[in-house]
Every structure is written in C-alpha cells, then in structure tokens.
Length: 398
Image 1 (cartoon, one colour):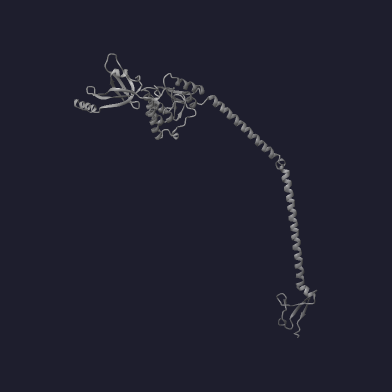
Image 2: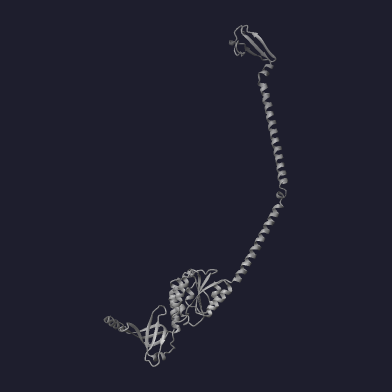
C-alpha cells in the first residue's frame, strides 16, 4: 500500500500547476495560523476539492471571498499519503467576473437550444384547475408568500406541496434537484412552480445550472419558472413549460380566478339562455306562419273541395270520351251493317235471283252448283226473296 500511495503522489506531483474553477462552500481562516482551509465545489456536480493557501492570499484578494463566491484558483495538487487525500495548494485566487459568467451562460444557452430543450413543441400544457401545486422556494420568502396568497385568493380550494430549499449559494442546485424529483414523483401534484425573488447575476446562477435545466426539461409534471423579476431571464425560464415574470404572475397563470370564472360561467349561461329564447321565438314565428297558410288553416275544405272538383272534371272528361268512342263505334257498326246487307244473299234474292238447293234424305239441303248434281227426278228446294218452293228436276235444258 505504501508503494501505491508513493507512486500516486509522484504522478500527481508531475501534473504541475493547474487552474481550478469552483464555488467556495467552506472558508476557514484562523488567527495565528499560517494556513487557511477552503473547500471548493463544482457547481454542476456533487464534487469538491480541499484547498490550502496562505491567509495573506485571502486578505489581499481583489474581491471579498465569502461562501458561495465563484472563483478561479491557481496552484499545485498534492497527495497526502498518510490520509490518502488530494488537496490544492493555491498561490493565486481570482474571482469569476460577471462578464465571464454571462459568457458561460450564453454558451450553455446555445448548447441547450441546439439540443432542442427550448423547442415550444416540447412544452407540456398547464392544467386548467390543478388539484395540488408543488412549490419550490426559500423558507419564509416573499416569493412563497406571494404565490400562496395570490393563489388562495383566486381559488380558495387550491392545495400546495411546498419544498423549502436554498435558492442561491453552493447548496442550492442539489437541494432544488432533490425537491423537483420528489414533487415530480408525487401523483397528486399537477404542476410545479420554482419561485425566487430578484437578485444579481451571481444570485441567480443556480437557475442557469445545466443539471437543473436538464432536470426541468425531463420532468413529467409541467414546470413553471418564476425566477426574479421581469428583466431577469435565467436558463430555467427557457426550458420550463411556462415562464412567469414574477412569483405573483406564476400564481395568476397557474390558478384561475374563481370570481372571474364564475362571472364567465354566468355570462355564458345568460348568453345561452338568450340564444335559446331567441331560437324558440324564431321557431314559434315559423309555426305561426305555417298555421296561417290556407292549407293548414282549413285543410279539409281546401283539399276536399279541390279534389272534388278535380274528380268531377275527370269524370266529365271520361264520360265525354266514352260517349264519343261509343258513337264512333256505333257509326262504324252501321256502316258495316249496310255493307253486309248490300253484299248479303237476301239483297241478291230481292233483285230477282234465287237459290236452288238439292234435298238429300238424311241431311240438310245442299246448294246446287252444277247441273251434274241434279239428275232428273231430284227433289229441289228453290229459295226466293219472299220464301221457298219445292220442285222436281225434269231434265236438262240448254
């Protein structure tokens, strides 16, 4: 083990001097000592590094070094073989300027935008009337008071699940991430509000943290970002499903106004009733107009009289046509009768002609068509116009 520790110390010693950026989470300067102790934390990850330096370095720093300050330290790493720990012996300390912070935030903004975390199509809709609202804010803060009072004034039945966390400093991001995760897993929470009052760029840095931005974007519950005042715009505003200019505005956006909603319902009810009455009146007028028509005012007299006249006219036309057809057929029959009479045998007999028939025993008379059919002694029947006479054939004559 001693060999391994010695080799690790040699490797770290060969690294030389490095620049390290972080956030001061602990600062310990004791009077009469030659060494000051600092704990430097990575603001985006749960990692920290022990730093030692001369107390004069802290006293002569161009900016006041306090817990929560972002700094850049230059020094050499050392590995203590006895405790197996690594520390940085700092020889220079610089504060991270506002310009540098803004530049880093802008680079992170471009990165998140390129990944699509700001895409409006990914924004989840805020429920119209949430049952329970999750609120992440500082304990006893003005933001908490504003959100709860405004929300309860607008809708007294609203419920809150409040998670108190630091809203600035090195412990803010881990605490907010933990609270966000717990509220997101709670099935009763319909929307989450992350609220904080205004502040400087350094005070609002936790809400531009990459880990927090990604956690907000990946949450399944809609998240409302209400950080600072109108001019403030941390990155959480862009990844959240809804941005509120102030905590008070967040309460107004999430919770509907009961009085306004009741007035809207009353107005819609009045408009619906007026529309229904107007429709009924219009239909009544239409029915009255239909009832005033002659066909509906006295349907039997109008229809029956009209149909009776039509039937009478139809009977007259049918009777006329039948009589006309009977007269025409009667005339035709008379003509045929006249022609038949003219062409019949009675007319011929009347002109002096006769019909000679041979009387055959056992059958009816047969008309004589040839002298060959009448030998002498044949019984004959001679029919003339006014009757018939019997005769006997005496013989043939030329």
